[in-house]
Picture 1 (cartoon, one colour):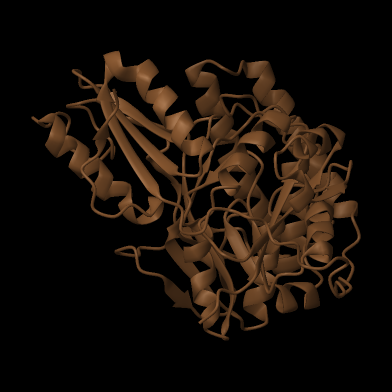
Picture 2 (tube, rainbow, N blue to C red):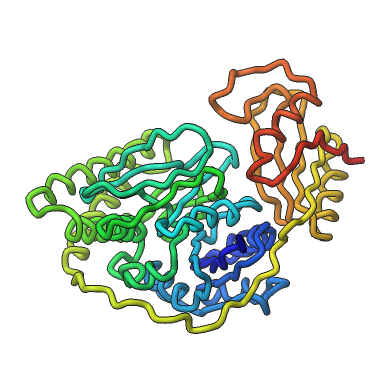
Length: 418
């Protein structure tokens, strides 16, 4: 079966460096039929136009702090059968689209979402959860890495993450896309519940993985410390007005506010916030609620046919994989070798181990290769035993096995870098 054409939408605001890295990762997608739509502020437009494949990008200027409106603009220009979304501070694994698009071969599937890895590149930040109209979330206990198609239950939806989700365009556009009343936060969750109310099935795809960096913004610092909760409060007020019974809205808001307060107090205990910061942020949350309650809830008009034809982006379908390995003293040579190979079109994974028990970290390097570093005897998966008596070759094989399916690596032992 031919690959379904996919439109990848990236919304970016005031994070040009993060957008540049995201585009470098997207350019390595091992998928034969996709286009890339960047909806960005002026600084993001400059970053996108500096990309080597700028002529193959659809670059849409948009300078308003409303992620729902920006995503709808991306949908309007999306000519693919499937519309996938990734945040500007995220980088996809090379096989991301291949896995994320696969469930749409079933005509009953209208949406899909994958797993998200956190800032160390190894721990999961997000796997699978459900959500109710009260905003209550529950972790879904799914074993293994096979995709699962879930049919909605009354009042409960599969909650997808905006940084790793895809929707069938015909249904997404017919539903009016995202509600602009959600300028930030819960925009995709509102869509999830509307999709569930319509009875549409969605898939959770564990092997469709992205790495999410949580870059700083006007709402959070680089260490994720909250700076402003106003829009979060506004979005929650809109969400409850749309999806929660009137009689339960007060209790749902109190539970949400208590959760936010607990989160802020945790930051205060750890040091980034002072007591007056907590009070200021909670006042912003309540101010946002009042603003949200004043926002009109209107029916969403369908989004029309694509405003521009499908513009294929080259990506790297079928690209050769390179696995490099070495020790601390090989760092400079490994990085030069990895950058050279990436520049000539290979998808490169470099593993560098020190003779320590340091925990492992994984990142996508700005030069276009994946780099994992850590101690020979240190943890990669954080639930592993504290120290394991590895030899270098066996540790390398274990780490390659761990990421082989999402990186598209066949059985390899690794090539030492000179």
